[in-house]
Image 1 (cartoon, rainbow, N blue to C red):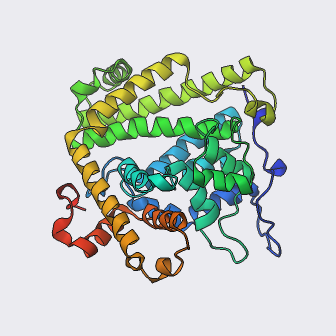
Image 2 (image 1 turned 45 degrees about the vertical axis):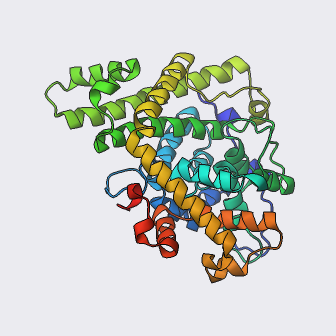
Amino acid sequence: MSLAGVASDPGKTRGRRHEEVGRVVRGPRDMFQRDRDRIIHSIAFRRLRHKTQVFVAPDGDHYRVRLTHSIEVAQIGRGIARALGLNEDLTEALCLAHDIGHPPFGHAGEDALKAAMRTHGGFDHNGHTLRTLARLECPYPRFDGLNLTWETLEGLAKHNGPVRRPGWALADIDAEFPLDLTSHASLEAQVAAVADDIAYDNHDIDDGLRAGLLCLDQLMEQPFVAANFAGVERRFPGAARERQLRELVRDQIGVMVNDVIAATQANVAGAGVATVAEVRAAGRTLGTFSPELARQERDLKRFMYANLYHHPSQLAAAEGARQVVASLFAAYVDDPRRMGKDWAARLPDGETAMVRHIGDYIAGMTDRFAIDRFAEIHGRDAVPEALKHA
C-alpha cells in the first residue's frame, strides 16, 4: 500500500526562513533536493568523516565513522521511503544531517560539553544540529545558516517525537522560525529515525565483531540474532564464518526494513490519517517497528550497551575523551585566544554567550583535531593513554 497521500510535497513547503532575493535557480531541483545538496556540501557534513561512531579516532580504515554511518542511514531511509511512497529526498536530507551536531568523541564528548556548559543551558547534539545548520554554517552573503526548508528543520528537531522542553539551542531556532515542536513530525522524519536505529544496531555489530569486542557465542544469546544466523547457516553451510557474519548483518537489515514498511502501513491505516497534517496531529509515532520486533530491538540495544558500548576498552576511551573535552573547555575559558584568531575575534560579550561560543568551537572539532589541540596545550605525553593511537 502506497502512502503517497501523506508524503511531504516540496511544492507545498512552508518555505525558508530567509527569502533568497536575487538568487538565480538553475536546474530541475526542488526545495527538498536543494536542502539535501546544501547539507552534503556543508563543512559540518565533511567533518563527520573524522568523528566517532563507535570507536574513538579509529586507526583501522574499515570501521564506521559518523560520516559513513550517516550515509548508511540515508541508504536505508531512502529505501523505506521509496517502498512507502514517501518523499525520498526529504528523507535522505534528514538522514544525512541527523548527526551533524555531534561533538568529537560521540556521546562521551557530549557528556563533557553538557557538564562544562551546565550553568549556561547545557548542550545536546540534536539542538546543536539545528544550531549548526541554521546559525553556524555561513556560505551565503545575505544570511547565516543554510536556510533549509521548514520541513527539514522540523524533521531534524522532532524525528524522535514531539519536544516538550527544548534546550536553549533549539528554542532559539524555534523562536525565530516556529517548528510546532509539540506535534509529531512528518512520516519522512519518522522513517529517518527508525532507519538510524536499523543502521547502528546492525553496523555496530559488524564493527564490534571486526574489533574482537563481540563474538558469535555472545550474539547467539539474542533470539533475534540466533534465528537470523540459523537461516544464514542453512543457506550457506560451507561458507567462511566471516562471510556468514556479513550475511547475517545484511539479513537483519532486510528483516527490520520489511517489518517497518509493513508496520507503518498498518499504523497509518489504523489511525485513519490521509494528509501530512493528520500525521502530525495523530498523537503517536506511525513510522515504527511492529510491537514484537520493537521488543526484540530493545533487547538487542541492551545487549550492545552491556557488551560493546560499555566494554572496558570503550569505557577507557570514553573517559579519556571526557578529559580532553573538559580540559579544552577550561583552557579556552581561561584564555579564549587559544581558540585561534578567527574564533577569538568573534568572542561575544557576556558570560553565557562566551561559554556557548566556546561550546560551538569545541563541538565542531573532529576527534583528531581535539586531541591535537589538547597536545598543543598540555603536551603529547599528557594525551590519555586510550587516545594515543589517534
